[in-house]
Length: 444
Image (cartoon, rainbow, N blue to C red; front, side):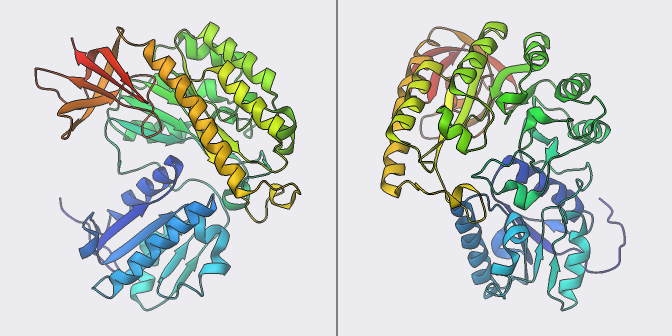
């Protein structure tokens, strides 16, 4: 392909590491598209000229991971790496803490500054150390280079205005900002043919409410459903208070909607939920789950929960355990409460000891594992459409996902096939065995 002549530094080998959530992945993919205008992208990090680390800092563990990757890049400078750029959440929130400690880093950029990446590269090669951390604002374009295959994430909003007491996101990414529908349609068109378009935001179901023009998630879904290149649409991170009857109906009747809903609940004890500044109740959540299952036949519901929140008593914890047993969610993820400086929850008395957090975290996983086992056992003998995604060299079987498996967070379906399998195609797989979170089947 003929490269357009441009001023400044051209054709450096750029390696990019993306950390954290799928929303961060979308930011990275947009940055890759911008970088490709002037430079060569590489996954051979040992021979890269420039290393860009797009960071997460939502939890202490994510900050440690980011620092670890930065330190690895600093070591690589001794072996020929020329420049290091750190982007995203870590410099956005913790710039003052890291800029003087990580002196080997040539540039720091915030969560809404990716559009300046080419200019920043030119500046650091001129000898400048660059700090480009502005206020959170609009998305940086609609073009991306996908890092996934067969599916793609679409970040429909950034920031958050919910102010859950444990969460740093509003302090990092600012208030909730919906991306205009026209921009999202154009971005989705540019993705090419995909089996799954996965809608994500900090609170996906809240889409459009800040625009004050009647736009909402259902309207966006209907517009995206008209696209010929999009075969299916999956919803992640829908806060329960915004899961409306209209959205439930759309899940039930729209043939492009995948019958799956990720709905972060975080707890089920009413007292803890109030301390978290969450708007629901345990009984209300159970009623919503029942309504979803009644109206959307076969829907798979996933959620996340926090163990060891401040003032979480034994009784409150047992209420959460009982909730899990009643809800029988298809899958769930659990986190130990992380005390984040600057949040309201960090200032609460009654902080739960780490050992207690760990014990409760393990118990929640144990309870949910039994539920998953029961759920999966009920699938044995049934046949599902499974998209093939790869081959397991150890087990010598193919693997893929059905509608109840979101990428990365849910289990896989491993299957035997006597004929060749083409990745990205759907096959009828009869389930013959369940082991833990994964299923095994055979191609019909």
